[in-house]
Image (cartoon, rainbow, N blue to C red):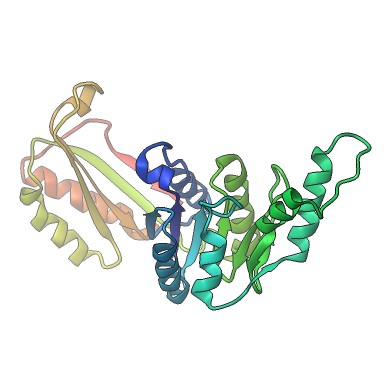
Length: 272
C-alpha cells in the first residue's frame, strides 16, 4: 500500500515554522522497512483541504496527516475530513472521556471539573471527528488524534504527533513491516555529466529487471570539503537485495569503462 503524508498549516507555508514531520516519518517508516510514496503541504484553506482529502480518501493509500485538528478558528482538518467523506462531525465518546480526564489532570487539586462551562465545551470540540472514526492515543497530554480507515490525523506538535505515528505503524500495520526487503548501493563519480551516464543507467535497468538506478548530481560544496568539494554524482542502484549486488558491480564496471573517476571508499550500502 502506498504511504503518503499531508502536512497542513499556514505556518509551514509562510516559513514561521519549519516542518519536522516529513523527515521523522521517513525515518520511522525506514526503521520498519517501509518508504514514503508522496507528500503534500497544504495551507489552512478549507476548500483546498476538502479537495485534497477527497482525492486521498479515494486513493486507498495510507495517509498520515499532521496539523489543524485543534479547536481554534484556524483549525479545519476535522471538519474538512467529515465534509470530504460526506458524514457528520460527532463527539467521540472515548475522546470525550480522555479530554475530560485531561481537564481534571490540569485542575487545582481537589477541584472538580465542570465540563458544561463554555471553555470546556469548546475543548470538547477537539474530540469531534467524522462519524465512524477511531481514536489515536496521545501519550503526551491524552487529547487524541483520530483515524478514518487508513487516514490518520494527528496534531502539528512533534512531541505528540511522532509517538502517534509510531503507534499507528505498530498497531495497524505490523504485517507490512519488512514485508518487501529493499537494498541500495551507491558510489561517488567525479567530473562526469549525467548525460554521459544515462545510456549506462538505462542498460542496467534493462539487464536487471526490478532494479532502479538513481543519480544525484552536485556542482560541489566547498563548505563540506573532501570529496564533496568537487563536482560529482552520487550514482547507485536500489531494489531487491538479491539483485542489487550484481547490478552495482555492473554499474561500477560501466563507470570505469567510461573513464569515470570513482571516489575511494565512497561506496555506501543500505538494506531495510
